[in-house]
Structures are given as structure tokens and as C-alpha cells.
Image (cartoon, rainbow over all chains, first blue to last red):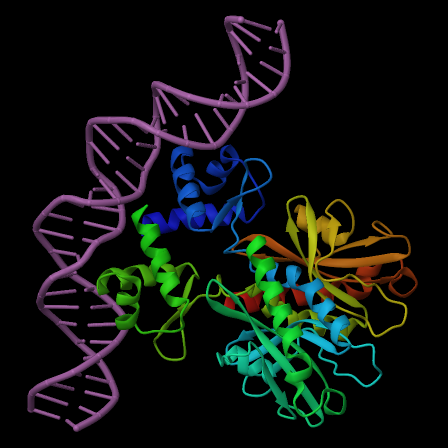
Length: 201
Length: 201
DNA sequence: TGAACCGTCTCACAATCTGAGATAGCGTTC
DNA sequence: GAACGCTATCTCAGATTGTGAGACGGTTCA
């Protein structure tokens, strides 16, 4: 599939950073006209973009690591607004990985290390990443994954697909038996803020 | 660019979730043979994948950041093995962005927030991302970016290109004036572990 | 055993992509 | 202000390339 191979060559070349066409073409091993045609076509689909002035860059559809960078301040803000530990999870196979964590200032708090691998089957974030949706925009769980711990999560969608789950979690004693009533709305807001931030990058 | 339009139609269709070819073809508005040919070609480039048994899914290249999710547990492990703060950086233009951080348990420690933008010109991770290679597999810097701080970094390569730098950093008093001697090997190991994990996904 | 699925492959045909070169725009420099 | 060097963008005739109905071989059902 020649067109695809060449398109990928363009994307791979752009992975090195922003570059003008004159640099892109040789980097992708293509004639200028061809590189240009492909770059423009990819741009129309969101795989390529232009930066400040003129140069070609990887498009919003491929800068996945942006998820973590754009979500970081929002997850920290969620922790501040709720006073509880906040995390961001992404799915990997049939597990979920914590890729971002902000810890509650309380001395009794949930601690999930960045990099932890957790089961997809348990916890509110697991539900989200398994595709469970709810009309309220959030999902809660109480003592599902760990005794004494409750959590509320919301899904972050990008291009119509759930790519991550934002959560707050803490002791049942503080969150109560219906944690969504207390924090559901803010968690949902945070998820939407991340979606918006992803669109802007 | 017909081939691209059709490829994107396939990807968009797959955004709805895993599906067999018989479902994918009509969803993408394409004949079965065409959808199949494109899906297979996209698979070869990591844009499409197969799930548990048979069905087509969005590939690692499109689902969040592969790099961050596979690297997260490894960076956390590096922190545990060295006792020092560990980070993962990627290049963006002529800066570097911290996309993953695990903090040392020591009370005197380096803190780099996920999302921070740092100069490419200074620090061991900067050297790596600028393309400096070393025969030992790691690069160290002492008080280059910030007074009192030393760091050791190693490059993570994918498809023959450096895509990220893993680092440990901490006070010169603990790491010494030749931090590589103490941690170079583990950092290099972590980088290789990430490379392996990237290949497997 | 046969029907109803599935993914994969084939092949003649022409639509589609190709890429050297022409063109148009935009700052500099003389 | 004209001549330059540097971009991105467009053109066009030609053939490589992708096309897709249908055949094929493998499952899993009843």
C-alpha cells in the first residue's frame, strides 16, 4: 500500500519535530511534490498540523502523550477542589495504568503511584474504561477494589472514544456511601476540561 | 487522496470499538475486500491491531500515548531501585517536556511536575534528546540545569530514533560528582525495558 | 453434512497517484 | 524597484497502483 507507506514516512519524519517542507521531503525520502501532497492530505484528517508560522507538525490526532501533559494541571486542580487524591488512568489490555496522580493533603488519603497497574474489573475507573457509561457523566464505587476506599470517575473521550478515566478517591468515611453526590459533578467537569484541552492542542 | 480517505474511514469506524471485518466494512462504507486490505496495511504500521481473538481494534499508535502507558510502571520501578526521583522526557520543538514523573521518598528530592517544559540545552536528558550518544548507554550532568542537582539519563529508541529520555535526578550530595557510576547502569536498563515494552505493544 | 458464518486471496481493469517542472508569493539585498 | 533566493503550491501526461466482485479454505453451529 504505497500511499500509506509514504504517509507513515511523513509522520515518522515529523516525529523529530516541526519542519518546513524543504526539510520534510528529504527526511521522509520523498520528492517535494509528493511530500507536500501527502502532508496536506494528512492535515485534512488531523494527523498533521501547522505550527506558529508555516512549518508542518504532528497533528492533534497523534500527539497522544499530550493527554498526560494537558491533563496534569487539571488533575491537580481536581485534587484541590475536592481535597481528595485524584488520578488519571488509561487502559492497557485488560488492566488499567495510573499515568497521573495528585495526592490529597489529608493525612488519611488514597495513594496510587504513577505507573501502578490496577485491575480493570474493579473500581469506578475500571468501569469507565470498560465502556460503562452513565447518564450522569460519572460513575462511583464503594469498597469495590479496596476496603474502606470509595471513588468517583468520569470518562475522557477523544475522537469519540474513551481514552482515559479521571478519578477522585478517598476514605469512605469522608466520601460517604454515595460519593457521586458529593463529587460527581466536579469530576465530570474535570473530564470535560481535559477533553477540551485535548482538542486545543 | 482516496487511499487516505478510506483509511481514515476505517479508523473512524474502529473508534466505535472492536469489530470483525464483516461489521467494519459497512461501517466504513467500503467493500469487504477493500476494508480488509486497508485494515491489514494499517496494522503493519501500528494504526490498527487485533484483539483477543480476531477482531480489528485501533492500534497502539492511536490509543493515548503508548509511550507513557508502557513506561509508567518502568519509571516507577526506576525510582524504587534508585531511591531518587525519576522522569521521562520527550522532545517538543527545541524544548523538552516532562511526561512522566515518580518522586523519591527522600525529603530532599528533585520535583519535576508532569507537563513542565525544560530547556533542551541543559541537563542530561537534554543531551540525550539532542542526539548525543555515549558508548556507555547513559549520560550524566552535574549542576548543569540547576545548582545542587545532578542527573543521569538514557535514551529510549523506537524505529531507530530517540523518542524519549529516562532520567533519575537528585541532590549532588547523594548522587556524587560522578552520578553515572552509581546509577548509569540501572537507568540504561530502564531505557531498554521501555524499548522492549514499546516493541511488544 | 451442509449451511452460515468468518478472514484471506486473486486478477483484469482503469482510476488514481506520481513527480519533474512551472508558478506564485514573500522577504532580502543591491 | 528590480533582481534575487527562498518558500509553498499547482499542473499534467503517463503508468503504477489500488480496486472490488467473487472464489477459496477455515471455523462453528444445527
